[in-house]
Amino acid sequence: MYKIAVIPGDGTGLEQVNEGLKVLRACQEKFNFKIETVDYDLGGERYMRTGEVLPESVLEELKSFDAIFLGAIGHPDVRPGILEKGLLLQLRFELDLYVNLRPVKLFPGVSTPLKDKGPDDIDFVVVRENTEGLYAGAGGFLRKGTAHEVAVQESINTRFGVERCLRYAFEYCRDKRRRRKLTLCGKTNVLTYAFDLWERAFHELGPEFAGVERDYAHVDAICMWMVKNPEWFDVIVTDNIFGDIITDLGAMIQGGMGIAAGGNIHPGRVSMFEPIGGSAPKYTGKGVINPLASICAGAMMLDYLGETEAAGSIENAVAEVCSKKLKSLNAGQMGYSTAEVGDMVAAGL
Image (cartoon, rainbow, N blue to C red; front, side):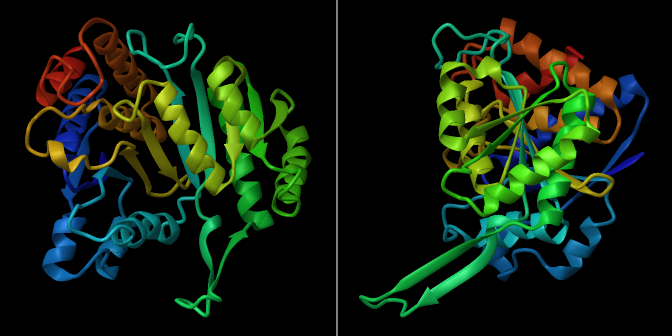
């Protein structure tokens, strides 16, 4: 029995989550496990109604679950930053979800903007440090609002935080990937303090993982090669801000936000899984949003919980639907409704 906290969130989040849960419930019958869900109405509507973003009592409850299944956060009537910082970043920091795991995988039948590239070329994973760096919130203003204003944003990188992220990446590369090649993405030629720490820790940990090949590339080169030669990459590990940037590029080359899923992970503790594409409020209630990213997030959650066979079955069913059923991954252009896509994946397990 797995206890799952469900946060549908805003916009099309509920529609996406419903299809993800549909597939998960189909899995529990086939693979002999149970999920028990509890819904939480966190998001824009609750904030506008009560002024609350993430009450302390709810945060404490969330710590007791095996995992959190998130829909989408973002409301057109709530000023940008309130929900993102107050809910998403707060959950990451308060639950210490120090790894952001983002698979970049092109399924058969899905179009990529990269010429002459296919599923064999685009299949890598980004491990992004999730609680430090520029997102730690260190900095401030001096003389704000004047002609002499100064704004400072500091990147915080601790040996503890860097090393545990690197260790997770090494272990993931060794245990989950066939090629076992780990690339550190940094900027050692300019960010000479932060990435000196990253690079030293990377090579000091390396001998513990003798079967893993180590590689390094600057972030700008990573962006170029992700477009030109994505097949070079197996697992990429990087800091918070660079990870945020290159994973969105990764989502585009794997076919778009409609297929991209991610996990916010603390091994052995409650972790959170979500589609990446956002709340897409203009499609709310129309039944046309693509649910595959949410379904893939559910597969990631099952893999994290140890149900690897069920997770693989979902991924295979998604690949089948992409290759033989859908006209497009874009909302309203799939050729099927949101619910019908969920039905097809559940039937294909």
